[in-house]
Length: 379
Ligand code: NAD
Ligand code: ZN
Image (cartoon, rainbow, N blue to C red; front, side):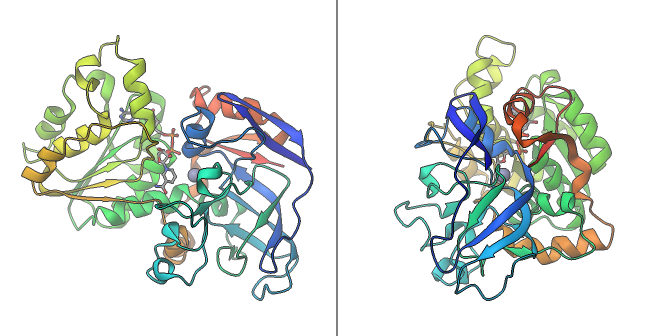
């Protein structure tokens, strides 16, 4: 079959690989019909994730049709259309019972913090991902969700990660009626965090990025105010001014490691004084949240050291929340919002590629070329 393959930092290609087979009685094989590239894939692509092995196939945002099921799979059959959450989880351990599916204890037990993720290096279990014609889906009775007839494949594929992650960011922020919410990052996750903040009753939503085309998109997609960080000298002061010096009730980090990368790249640039010595977004989020406010982190950080201003967080009495999204927990509510016309996840898809053009897709998404927001590949 055709599949994306990692060759080394900034090098991916489409290649032929053996088709996956049922390895355990509870596996299914899914024929992929849509597969996105995520901001998290860029951390792999940039070589920031430990134990990313040459030959690995990425892809944790995919939907498809069940091709085959193992003998113990009860809830799926050949021909079912499914969306598959990016987490691989058992559904019955201590953590899964608390709906902390991204922290499953039984999948990837060698790792102390994280459960399994499709196509996300051997540090999350080494499972091949869905940027391929076929993918093996372990624990097939637990993760996959049958796609309702009235849900498009394009909307469904965004429910495997970006949309529920943005939703969870707002949920962890405990956004309440009338709250001012600042979202750092106008990528797919930040866009859905902004949209979710409104759905939870926010009174004001402000999105921060340095890419004007993404901020323009955010204004249309999420009817938010925007701040271009290139135009601001001191982010915390700027956001405080915007909020009558109180600060934001909720600050969301939907950037992650990229801010550390951009810090290094820009050390000689004009944001040096803002960025040197701190993981920019965490710093800005903590310093621009109001006293007693909440900072919600879904941006992904690698092992790079981040200097977090934890003393300020303590003095302000902030609540810090963070996690990988527990996708499955959010699906019923998000599907309801889509069916009621309050949410259209597929509106953020800007680019479509054939799987064989995967190298171009990564290059364009990573370099933010051609006003790219979310690329989807169609095997
Ligand atoms: P993306 O790369 O498309 O978007 C990131 C955005 O951040 C870009 O628009 C970029 O211009 C902007 N940015 C960079 N530096 C910034 C700064 N200093 N201040 C403000 N904005 C800045 O990625 P995405 O798909 O939207 O994902 C965003 C983050 O969420 C990534 O770190 C990704 O790994 C993470 N993520 C987490 C989960 C989870 O479960 N916790 C799931 C999916 C993605
Ligand atoms: Zn993702």
